[in-house]
Image (cartoon, rainbow, N blue to C red; front, side, top):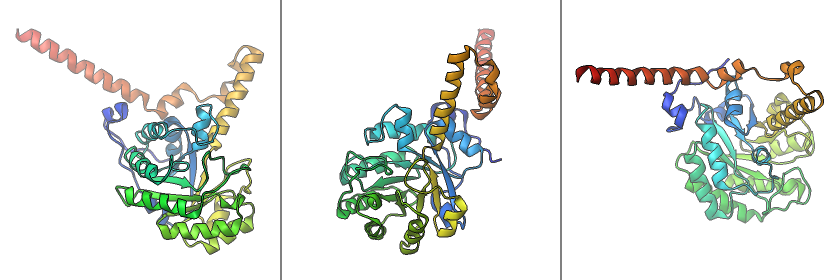
Amino acid sequence: MQTPFTLPFHSILWGYIVPRLRWSLRELLRGREAIPVPGVYAPSVAILAERLGFKAVYLSGAALTGLLGLPDLGVITLSEVAMFTRYIADKITIPMIVDADTGFGEAINVARAVRVLEDSGASAIQIEDQVLPKKCGHLSGKEVVPAEEMVKKIVMAVESRRSDEFLIIARTDARGVTGLEDAIERAKIYVEAGADIIFPEALESVEEFKRFAREVRAPLMANMTEFGRSPLLSLKELEEMGYKLVIFPATTFRASMMASKKILEIIRDKGTQRDSLDMLMTRAEFYNLIDYYRYEEEDKKVDTKAREIVKRVKTSS
């Protein structure tokens, strides 16, 4: 099992610094294997993903808006996304991809989003070519902007980043609007504009995934969201097609909601959870996850030092 770097206690407690990453997302792309990237929506979930050996995580807009009880319609703000990005980045040492929807506006807004999210600890952002108000990519009724508008956003994003290690992921939603041919053509244009990774949203068959990978010569990211338009393919299957990153954006959120629903029903119906403790993470497991006892140890050390200082001054008086 992989374990996170040991960081100065105060950086963990107050988030003064962003932990140094073990590897960059660009380094992961150089490898031969496809990388599974679970969606996270809270620091504790991100810590758990790293502890379980995942090499990168994805801050999903769908999961984050769901956590806030909001629909995935682009109503979340840059400041809210940046806040959660900082919270999560402070707790992990693996790269995080951040879903930035349509870039929070036009090209000029994308420039600010890039700087804010990069400074907040993101390793990459994903921007899409939908018209606002955007929709979940697997729903009907969405629209896409002209390719030229998306190109402006990609160019602005590339020119605004502070480091080349901060990657720009261009998502196209054209498959469900104007068809696969247009999605492929847009992807090629987005690569030419400077996108580091291409994300074809809501492809509808194995053959479409294969064809897209054959025709678009760039690192590709696949979305294995549940209950959508795409077939649920395995990491190995997508790797063999040529995809480098495979996201599971809302899986942990949906699992958490279902688990919460089940335990709430038990409490409602039985008036106790005592026969269902096997459904819960134990106190000891959670304390180990967040390194609880390290906080106590640091508090004791400070308390001891304070007592020694007071005693020394009183003794010398």
